[in-house]
Amino acid sequence: MIDFLERPLVETDWLADHIDNPDLKIIDARWRGDGTSSQDLYRAGHIPGAVHLDWELDIAWTDQAGLRYMLLPPDRFGAVMSRAGIENTSRIVVYSDYDYSGSTRLWWALKYYGHEQVAVLNGGWTKWQSENRPVEVENPTPVPGPPFTCKVQPGWRATADEIQHSINRSDSRTRLVDTRPPEQFAGKAVWTPPGSRYLSEEASQIEIGARKPMRAGHIPGAVNITSSTNLDPADWTYLPAPLLRQKALDNGIEPDHRIITYCGVGISASLGLFSLYLAGFRNLALYDASWEEWGTAPGFPVEKDSPAG
Image (tube, rainbow, N blue to C red; front, side, top):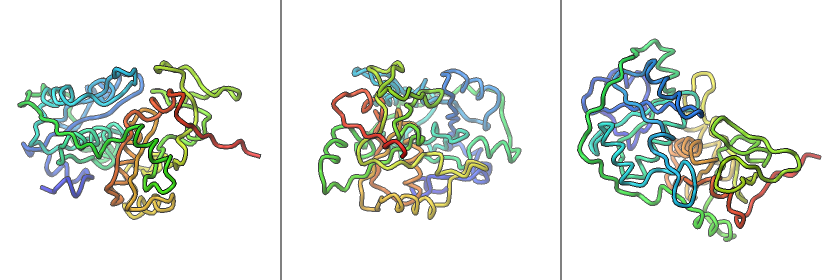
């Protein structure tokens, strides 16, 4: 078995060859913005033996500050893993489909809670199906495992305080990567589960059900690398590591930088972070609260693209 710490991206051929290994746990992390149909997708067919975890329904919550979609606290996260039959000794492969940020969100969450042996399936469900590999329609009942112990690795998670400190220092070695679509980065739209919600031309904020009206724009100094651009749109596999690395270098990101990714609520940011990890960068963190916090905090600075012309 390969070491997922060094090789966190596995191919469909590898999974097919090891699918019966009792130490391997497979997690279906497909997600849809309507909050329910990911479970229907799982019931209609999944990789044999996989259990289903939806990042929004299963590992997210609204915290005391009213921030939605935040990662569950360690005790609650550990309970979810135990119910799913995931143990601290498990070797985990996560998959989803499309841009499959659901799988990278769980990859990041497990890394943050100290679980090293977790990998993402390259191409996910999309590639598995296209290759006519085995599909299961039965819904296996997970056998609950022993308590899953979370050991927080704080370096994997960034806070607004860290970001504010970095943007106030001219010599900061921190780089911010906004992984949202260009229209959100430019301040023309904001994230919602179904997709971008556009503002009227005269509006600077919009009500979307967050704790306060959502402002539009991006964190000062951030660069925009939309998460889906790290993938080959033909089969949703990751671009080769040298291309991912060059993309980062072209955006002024160097190996010695502290790199923080963010998006609307910390989901596509996990795909951006995972892509940077594949590219060889290691001082990485995800701003879990992302624009859900920054965009609703009136005192936090916001930039917008200047109008054309």
